[in-house]
Every structure is written in C-alpha cells, then in structure tokens.
Length: 323
Image (tube, rainbow, N blue to C red; front, side, top):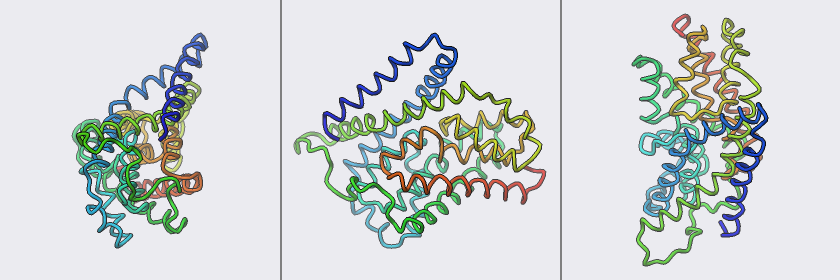
C-alpha cells in the first residue's frame, strides 16, 4: 500500500468519528455511535492480534510450508479449515492473516476455507461458547463440527462456481513483500511494519461495517424476532438475520445467543446465530473486499447463507426436542 493511501485511510477514519460526534444530538445517531463504539472496542484487540499474526506470517513463515497445499485442492481445503487451531483469531482479525497467507502462496480456495472456519474452529471460541452455555460440551462441540463442515463445503462450492478465480487480481499470490524494508532491519521490526499496513488497510472497512451495524441496531430491537421463536424454520432464519445485523465478535457472540434460550428460541437457531455471524455480517461484507472481488463476495453471500440454514435445520431435525 502506498503512503498516500495510508493518509487517506487515516483521514477517512477521522472523518467518520468527527461526523458521528457532530451528529450526537440525534437519538438514532447517538444509539448508533454507542453500538459502533461497542463493536469497535470489542473487536479492536482481536484485530491487532490478527494484524500482528499476519505480520509474523509474512516475515517468518517459509513458502515451503504451504507448497504441499498446492498439490491437492480438496485436501488443502480440509487442512486449511483446521488452521484456526494454530491461528486462533476471530473474524475481525482473520482478514489480515488471510492476506499474508495468500501472499505466501496458499491456494485461494484453502485460504477461503481458513477464513470461514478459523473464527469458529479455534480453542478461544470453543472456550467462550462452553462458558456461555454453562459448561455443556455439546454446544461448543456442535458449533465447531458444524462450522468446519460449512467452511469446507462453501470453499469447495465457491471454488467450483468461480473455477478457482476467487481472490482479487491485485493481490500477488506468493510474491515478495510490498514493504521493501532494510534487509539489515530485525525481522520483528519488519513484521511490525507489515502489521501496521494491515491494520490501516482493514480499519476503514471495519469502521464502515460497524457503523452500518450500529445504525441498524438502533432501528431494530431484539423484540422484533421474539414472535417467531415457536417456528423452527422462522427461528433459524430470524437468528441468522440478527447475526448479520448485530456484527458481534465470535469470541463473545455465544453469550448473546445463549440469552435467546430464555426467550424459547430452539438451540438450533442459537447455533445458526453463532455459525453465520463469524462468516457473514455487515462489517465482514466490506472487509472481504480487501482480498476478494465483488463477484466472489456476491457468490459467497448465498452459499454461506444457504449452507448455514440447511445445516442448522438438519441439526434440528436429527436431534428433535434436544435442540
């Protein structure tokens, strides 16, 4: 990214905050600002973690480590979907890591599988889900297994539909870093520069998405969905819509999902909320543009939505009253 682009990103972020401050007298804007602040404060630490992880990947991960993933597409997708066990970042932080993995030469379809599964199939999210559901291991286990199946299925489906042309043309796959730092500079310093580049690149999309989510949260209350709780199909669809609108970080969404159990929403719909949110919400739609063209994003939306819905409905049908 060019220095002038960095300045534009910083100016954009400042302009958004100034506009929100000046419009603070409006109840809707004030509520939206509070929602935006909550989303940003919740996600910022994880975005920083993801940016740092991405910088370390760029600097220290040898390209030879991903060469085997280029040989067999399906195997690469299945392995990459488990990478969250080693790189446990939430969806707010996965894009910077994904960007750097792509630059190291990981196949695009494998990168897509990691992007979808990483925020769900990781020990941090498993633990937070376990705590939210009072140490009932069935819920986090179902979430992880279903998340893995969905991520692998969607990655294969999207790859077949787009015939492998998934990422943006301006992202070099396995190329030298765009930051031409001093070769004598310590590796950790170069990694920090990569991280700074990534956080600025992702920041503007994240704030835009969080702002839209905040505006929607101020316009729609949770009570709108309570009337559909008795119908499993409507409950699953309703909770998926809520997950898309609320844009809650995967590390904390289980606590929100669990609260709907008190409103008699079936567990299958709560799982739908926890599965869709880390893969598709308002802020992610914009952040995905960092690595994907609009064509890929427009294919991802129905593939993720339909797969999550079908898997959640299947869980309900197979387990009956248990969910």
